[in-house]
Length: 90
Image (cartoon, rainbow, N blue to C red; front, side, top):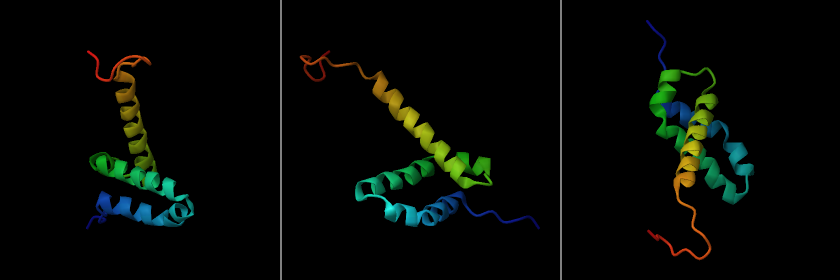
């Protein structure tokens, strides 16, 4: 029989637990951002499953880079508001 592969959501949870000491050593405000790294990875679960990475942190970090690029693109797409421009001016 073939090798059983753990569900990718479990892999993400295992990685998060493996880095728990690192999280505890972070400042409180940074711990929330640490949690967001794994939340972003969960948004890309199908991609992680397709990759079946030997090192799951690679897929987790790549998912985060994608989310950061999406956020940056959204910020860049917003029109610049000058100092005297009213909010939502059309």
